[in-house]
Structure formats: C-alpha cells, structure tokens
Length: 222
Ligand code: SF4
Picture 1: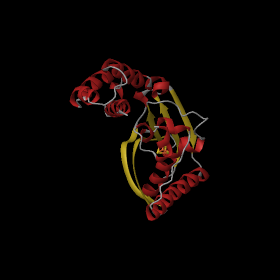
Picture 2: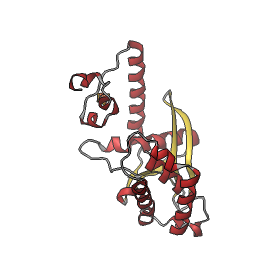
Picture 3: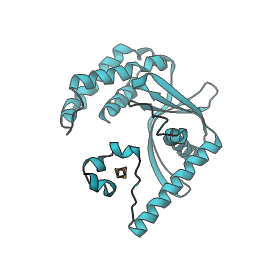
Picture 4: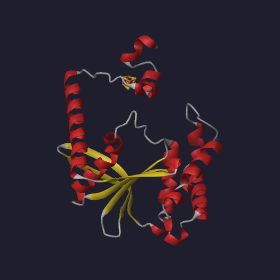
C-alpha cells in the first residue's frame, strides 16, 4: 500500500510540471523531495512487518514510475484532473472515491485511469466484471456529478509494464451500479439482523482476519 501511495504521489507531482520537463531527471528530483518531505523512511520502518529493505522499496518504486514511459510519453499527455475526489449518490447509495486521473481524448471523450503497483488480477480468481468494477463505478460517479459519460477506462499496471483498457458501455455501467446497490442492501440487512456471514474463498489465505485468528470460519484451524 505504501509503495502504491508513494508512486501515486510522485507521478501526481510529475504531471504538475510543464510538459517539457516531464523526464527522468525531474522524476528523480521529485521522488527525492517527496521521500524526504513525506518522511517515508520513518513511515516504512514503523511498519509491523517489513517486506524488504528501504533500498528494495526505492528500487521497486522507481522501476514502477519509470515504466510509465513505456506506456505513454508523459510530455504528450495533459490531464484534466488528478486525485479527483468525488462524493455522490448512485441509486440511493452514498459513495466517495478518489480518481487517479481523468483525461480527454483528442475527440473530447473522457478517459478515466488508475495506477496499480501490484499484480495484474489473476483471471482464475477475478472475473472481468470484478477487475473493472472500481473504474466502472468511478465512471458512474463521474457521470452522476458532471453528466459526462467516460468513453474508456485504463489500468496502468506499472510494476508489470502493462496497460489494460476497456470501452465503457451502458450495460457494464449498469452491472457496476447493481453490484453497489446489492452490497449496500446486504450491509443494511446484516446490520439489522446482526448476522454477518463469512464468505470463505481461496482469498481467505490472504485475509488479515484469518491471520490474526478472529475469523469465525477459521477458528478451528488456528
Ligand atoms: S478469512 Fe474469514 S473474514 Fe477473511 S475473507 Fe475469509 S471468511 Fe471473510
């Protein structure tokens, strides 16, 4: 999470620079400045579990940032919004999100993008609908607040040097809206009854509640 936050922070400041200055030298200078000002070494070293050294963190972050140049030429890209906060309501459900970047294609159509520094979702565990849910929801929220429908969504998998794109359709937006309404309904029903059922899947092996031994579904195994 910290790696992602640091990379987002540096890239946001890179795109605040004039187009001609968005190069590797500027990136290095911004990264060094944010590293010190954000007190990142102390933040990382305070983590209860370190996944590597500070040098490993810096190397991974810098590799992810510089991979951006393989996916686009930052000097040729102008963003309409970065880290845009959207608070709105979709079919009665209150939602809040921070959108990494919104740009306009030459024909004026809206493109919503998100940086990822982790793995590309494994299609064995994540359907395409799950993978695109976050950005489809952002597109629905952006439309609800501005009246503008995004044409395209993009995930920048920076650590993997890969970009995935999806053309937005009303059908896909509708699926994302139905999911959010049904999740909200499930939370309301569970809150009213006091019954919060476990959802046991392969992903439990990565769940913190299982690790710290408080998931009822895994009590016997801890
Ligand atoms: S370990 Fe328990 S709390 Fe975590 S995802 Fe699985 S069922 Fe849910």
